[in-house]
Image (cartoon, rainbow, N blue to C red; front, side, top):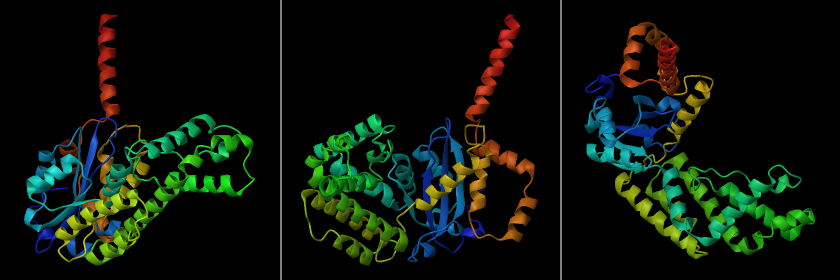
Amino acid sequence: MGNFRGAVFYNDAKWVLIADESVQFGNKKLLFISAVPAIRCSECKPLSYTDLTPLVLQVSASWKSADIASAISQHIDLEQIAYCISDNGNNLTGAFKLLGCKHISDINHKFSWIVQSVFGNESCFEHYTKSLSSLRAKWSVSKIARIVPPNQRIMSRFMNLKPLFEWGVKMIHLLENSNELTEKELEELSFLHSCRSFVFDTYQILIRLNEIQKLFKNEGFNDKNAQQALSLFSEVKSNNWLKIKELLLVYFADLSSKAKGETICCSSDILESCFGKYKEIVKGNKSVGISDLCLCIATMLGKNDRAKTKQTMESVSIEQIKDWKKKNTSKTLFAEKQNMNKKIERNWIFKK
């Protein structure tokens, strides 16, 4: 990840930056920013690893807007950035604002915010989710474990609610149309009777939101796709449907003003996938933190040119990797613990 300012690689082309931070490893966070040719993002198909070029791959205990902006400006001419995609984290959006770059909100995080805005303080939603949590806590290991609902994510809990409401719909069907349930199961699921309308209504909303996400992730955002998406909410069935539709209109209007009639990408899923694959690769590493192994992310990307990869590997020296590690990573939690224990042992031996 050298300094690419003015490099031939970026000349005469517009680029889309996709940025994300990893979930914290130990006491550090990995900032990963990838560049994709803007012309590729205008094509109506999802991105793949081969479309990505690593731009920034750095580790820090925290990432402030000014630090992110500095890292970006050191690696690419700002005039060549068409727009940037990320969640709405203050540090990332603040960095793009400092650089004067157009920001596109990632659809996953935006839809999560929309759902939270509508359901977050609703009594029916709170009653339903608390009842599911109680069921899991009481009966996960029991004779009635078969009716226990799926686990709910503590973090980003509004990002994937569909399985919880799909479970609710299935259980209500069992309550109303089957003799399959035992007396104890009937008793434990009785709370669903009062939630029936809410569960079915919310499930239909979530199905449509998932369809919209799939459409935009596969074909990108443009005005035509926005109209197709809104048609799914054309028949307003409840106050919550209306609230969701109004928030979608605001989001789509913002995207449309930035797309200016073109097709744009509005998903950072590809980076989430990179992080997931990286975590799978290093899960057995005892360093408990981010080391120079994070460079393996860069090897996942771009076109698989074996000859070029071989040439690059042979031309990069160990000293260059050590220099990169010194500038871009820091001590892992495991290393810090080792140093602390050594100091304790030396002092203890001395006193003894």
